[in-house]
Image (cartoon, rainbow, N blue to C red):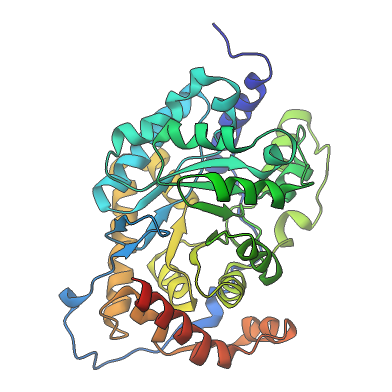
Length: 385
């Protein structure tokens, strides 16, 4: 039996996306701007490497991660990709990190593909699992009922609501509907039994929007900034593959539209000092992950690198990638004399070059941020840990 009418398009698109991101150049030419951040090396840390403890509570859930890392939402919804969610979830279970499934729209449209998502909890009974629904569906049709279905489907510890106006605008069959989304997010956040994470999908969240989200009670943000996988670019390439040319050509928007990750983390922490922030978007190694955390994120998020490692080199390759990132973050914490994760928020760092310039244009004082805002956020976190 085939998929129900309407859901076959969604399921097919999920498979297209996996094929596209693994086989094509889908990352932005624009930088995430982490190259303009430098942590000050401490050659006399007065501690041992084994003293480093990177564990952290995830998003006010009461559940702790062993390491400050999340495999962020990518896939599900097609029978051919169920195993991917299973393998990624099993990695999260093994290493004590978080895992998010991709958009669950396909399974909400057709419950017969729900196993492509629920396999995550089967393979990771103890890990932090994050469910996922889209803002355009909240604008038109989804509410608390669908949010609860998504959470129940994977027995999730939190629900991500993803924002993707750029992707929807350039997707051939996109749904660029964002009217009344904020009100819908508030209703879900108020009535759901698990925390809501509002996440972007590769173009970042600015200060002003984080302020709006915090004002309606959202306390968890995944900035997913510019500099990694660019879904405008993915949709343009997908359209070219299907029709020979893009039906909605994006021009330079496919590489340069959005808020770079480093800026997004700083702006999110400034806007919501008491929030849990996931720094994702272009994180490719442990140095970038530790820079994201030192800038003010609680944890770092990765997606494309681990997916490519899994599909191109198998589970052993994905394990090597994750182990490498974890060890690099631990070593960097050691070399900044940071025994605990949040000690990185007081580790000396330098912001320079273009990142410094862009923050100044946004009327954000990097020196005030480094020496006051991070410290205030740290004190709040320590009081509430």
